[in-house]
Amino acid sequence: MKMRFVAALMGLAIGFTGPILAQRKDILDPQITQQIRLLAMKYDEAFNRSDAAAVAALYTEDAIYAAQDGTFHGLQAIEKAYANYFQHWHSIKQVSTVDRVIAVGADIRAFGTWTSAFQDTNGAPKKDRGHYRWLLVGQGDTWKIRTHTNRSTNLHATN
Image 1 (cartoon, one colour):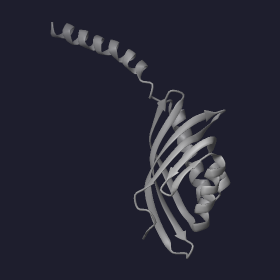
Image 2 (image 1 turned 30 degrees about the vertical axis):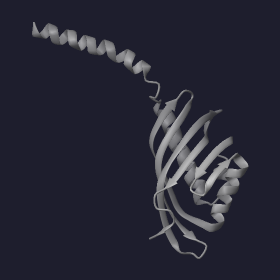
Image 3 (image 1 turned 45 degrees about the vertical axis):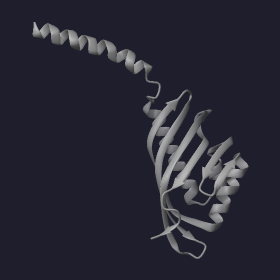
């Protein structure tokens, strides 16, 4: 009797699992998650070269970048913001970590942390870290940043 009861419960559990997983729209293909991690690596590479144009190329034309020093609308304004940053701060090593990736309709939200070692205009070493949030949209066979919110937890602190 107990065996039949256990078997019946297992059958019910298995029967409910399929529809529940089918309703989860935020579960991503592991390849997409890997593509987002590669995008973060491209961002870091361009940032570490102080290449404002290459960083901006990762954004959509209508992108919005919100950071401590302002909110920038559109690709040209974002490129100008990075160029201004790179005039005042020389990146030694920026590392972004993608902590969470979820689907939102056809778009992707990525959440993560970053650390940065850099020098100011006087050559003084500095460190910073924080959190970011991206809303990404597919464009062809790549993902682009539509919105980027960046928050520092230790803005321009010294070692």
